[in-house]
Length: 89
Length: 89
Length: 154
Length: 154
Image 1 (cartoon, chains in turn orange, brown, yellow, green):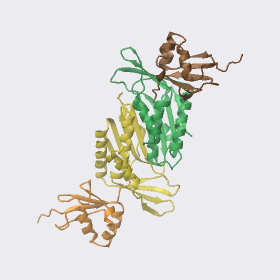
Image 2: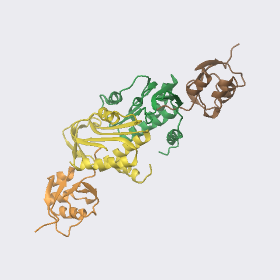
Image 3: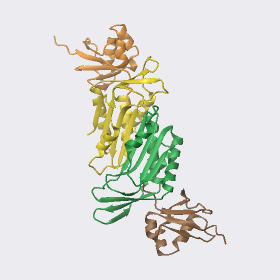
Image 4: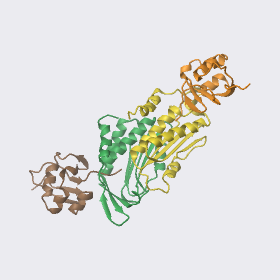
């Protein structure tokens, strides 16, 4: 059966370090529609995820390489990214 | 007799061109005490000076290489400069 | 059209600035900003820059395009390095060219402010004492610097 | 202590910027401003810069000293050329170095704003059609740019 929600999750900096991987395929259930809800769903996957997402408000998110807010819907996304506030420049 | 007011006058840009010289010794009378009054006195020295100083308000002045306003007194100055607004940079 | 590069190799600020003015005589002002790695009073051994490949380039291109919309620029170059950088080394370069100085200055500041807060880069510090360092925290001051452009209060 | 030079020869912006960061690892930001001669849509053949020898250097030194008082700078260089300059050629260079970007940017803008309105230089245009040109008029916008630093509204 074709699943709309199958996508790649990518993690950077201490989010990546806490989870212990830089990316993975995820397949969230249909009632999860925003990236904010996705953070909540991911946080329940295990200790390392709970640690990475312990303060959801500091997590920045991108859908298909564009910054989005936590209330953005991810339907149709190929890649959703989670990372700390940026410190480049 | 020792004269306090003997000094060098220097001219730049179109002030220099209109007067026709870049510097000269001047010896203004004692009742001339500010650079503004000096402009008035110089303007009376001839046609070329009248032309150079026809609009006193646009003339910028410096005493001993420091910007001063027209109401500055020049007693003791060695060098008084007259020039248009600056256009460097 | 801006030139944007994400690379681990060092850059040559002078060559990039020269490229923006080569063969043209209408540029009156070039502003070059170089961000360098500080040693933090001798504590820091290396700075490690992680980035989001693909998005880093796209995001800086978006910021550069916005700068070109806001100011009459004749050239924009932005280069950001990733990987390990030693104290004294270059991290980021922004070059702007315009007929007049105000546009060049403001656009360069704008680019740096947004690059700091929007370009997906993260710095990790490795210390001289061998401890492997903290991820650098984002600064409220940087968010405030970026916000001033949104509020039109500059 | 600022480096100030008034010269007819060209300058090397990259070498001047490099000199400010050589052998030190506490500089985080270098801003370089280069002002160039525009050809004014092909009209201009040469720009002639007259200056007040002695005062030009002293006045720029005073402005640089004021910048060093206002911002925590690790280096300041200002070079202004005089004589005949062709379109595309360099006129003025300002380089500022600091730990942080805001100080470097603001100090460079401050220096340029005051250099424009206080340094005793005058530009005369020589045109391609052989007419010998007008003295460039000072711009109200430049006075306004300098004034904003006095009123503390930046």
